[in-house]
Image 1: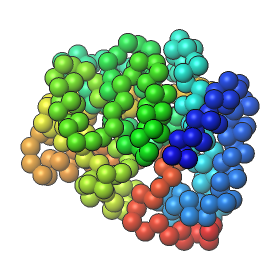
Image 2: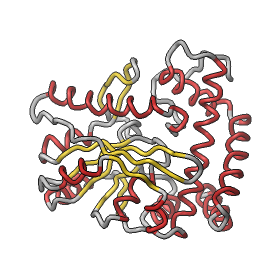
Image 3: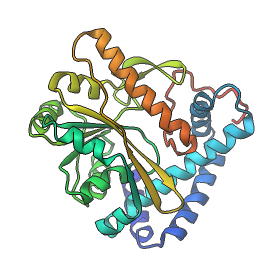
Amino acid sequence: MWKYLAFKIIGVPLSYLPVTIGYLIARVVADSVYLLSPKLRGAIANNMRHVLGSGAGDDTIRQASKGVLRNAARNYFDLIKLPNIKLCDIEKRITVYGWHNYEDAHNRGKGVILVSAHLGSFDMTGQILAARSEKVTVLVEPLEPEALLSHVTGLRKSKGLTFMPVRFGVLNTVINSLHRGETIGLICDRDFGKDGRRSTFFGEETTLPAGAVRIAMRTGAAVIPAFNLRRGNSHYDVFFEPALEINSRGDEALARNMEQIVQVMEKYIRLCPEQWVVLSPIWGDMTDKSGLL
């Protein structure tokens, strides 16, 4: 419960701050967390070492890890401030690339599954869809306690999107939404349910969620990779990739479909590793080998 109370109490005054001041506070908090949380620092450094490769030096890993925490803190500020920003103002801050890819997929009439990663200010990826009056349901990790989940969901859906925690029975709701030609959003870079499929991600095996692929194979929905990257302090680029070619049958097809999603996630994460705001270990061995602990 303390997480919920802290988030809500601190969030109210922060939500009225200008972006420049809010981001300055976010940086100070992030740098303090970096110094005071060796376990968290090690997990992020291990993730960055996989992304940047074995040739990356300790200083490069260190700077990238600090960048991850700074961007994560900016994301929290963006989320807290979201209800106080008009949709038209949000749209002015977003440059969209590949919107025709989304429209083409939507026009197929079998629904669209947007697959993404914890990259950039990822909550902003969805807001462009709200600004353009698209019917979207985003599946999210169930947070504890329930009050925290309700509060965070309330912030995220303040502009018209629907957010639904991944729980028993959600699959039927998702399939019905797709049959109506609507859009579902799924984050595919973290297996928080611990029930994903073994995949090679940045050259090493881990488990990644396979729900998006399984649902697409079952329903015929189009799968569109969509990603957000920060550009400066308060502007964002949102990219909609062409629809993936989803094979519909067999275990080998599932593996090939997963590989397509992995490849496009790797492509965008490599563009801005410090914007990949995953704070938990993605690979089994979270021990940092760089001496940053």
